[in-house]
Amino acid sequence: MQTIPKWMQGLTVTVGGHGVVSHVGTAGLRMLAFKSGLTGELTAALRVRGHQVRHDRGQVLSDLGVMIADGGTAIRHIRTLRDQGELFGSVASASTAWRALEEVTARQRDKIAAARARARRRVWELIAARHAGIPPSRTCYGDLGEWIVIRLDATIQLCHSDKEAAAGTFKGSFGLFPLTAWCDNTGESLAIKLRPGNAGANTVADHLEVLAAAIAQIPPKHRRRILITCDGAGATIELLAFITTLNTRSRRAHYSVGFDLDERARSAITALPADVWSCVLDDTGQARPLEEAGTAELTGLLRQSAGGDKLANWPAGMRILVRREKPASGAKLTDFEKARGWRYQLIATNTPALALPLQQGEARHRVHARVEDFIRCGKNTGLASLPSWSLAINQAWCIAAAIGCDLLSWFRLLCCEAELAIAEPSTLRYTLLHTSARLVRGQRRRTIKIPHTWPWAHQLQRAIASVLMLPAPT
Image: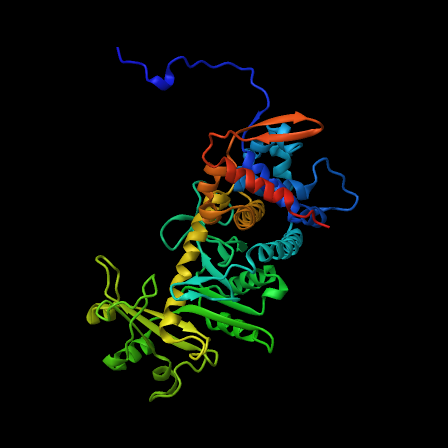
């Protein structure tokens, strides 16, 4: 007979404990939703005159966002909050949450977006006060200063059952193909538009709608310097022309987007002298050997070479940069790339050369890959699963998921320290959000007592205390 492990010896279980609650850190998120003004703004946006409800719809949507940030993947998981009334108070049931999402119309989606923008304005003031400004977007050669960076990208939401607008995708899977926008400075989810699975990657109307919604989420005082990035699939003449029109005497709107390796680009690359290639910068800002990778500018060959301006239909001031790199084993290459032994990536930007040298332009665009991390974390925060067949309900769920992403970003920026200030959702949940503690009553107060043996007890105590010290919304 095997020896019983020491940790199992003498262990029994009974029912009879009291004052113990879990998901203590999630209570901090719910407090933050109130202190940020988000809950109040949502309440005002979703209030219907003459329509009395037991559970305020703004509070329900806010609670759904908190539940999703906590790791919930279905509407019924709102029981995580509801079953702990001693800590969270009155929380709507799953059926009420269903009705709340079902009641969200297109007009109410616009009101919710406006409410989120007003709450975000207040939160950015708090972030700027704590960090002496909005965190700058980082690159290998330094940060971008006061520029606010919006990253656009589409992603596939897999569906394992038939849902409205679900269809076969370009990758051979089945689901939807939403377009998303993220703030690189803060990690917030600015906008998301659900689209059919067979929607085009470069649908102009969708990109213009999502970009306009994303810019509307940026507080007005921070819109003076905006950089928009996307990959080559989303870069169209109409999108870049729209961004160009955003430039005024007091506002600069720049873009950095992928560009197609078409015949004119291939001809320009072929005509490039060998000595014009410059080293690219690695992740530490150091130059890589030219034998491994290089970058050059094609603007002159495309704009002013024999045959006239080959970019005449594109916005004036657009520059074309090219990066070449020795391909990795198994990389998919075009015939042109196979013949030359290099893999090429083209970048279009309207940032002038004096403000953005060649190497920095290539490096600045390369960090657009961070949008994949935002999407991955977003899928870990509700965006991977859609609860209903109805496209309208699923769109409302995505709004709640975006609220959950925002709450996690705000919690990191306003309440967390050291490594937890940059932690991903799964790490935050394990270390802070899902922590259990005792809830003690006395002297007309309730006190959360976190076990001192928990490795992150003091970080959680300071995080919740930081929320409590935030000024109440007016």
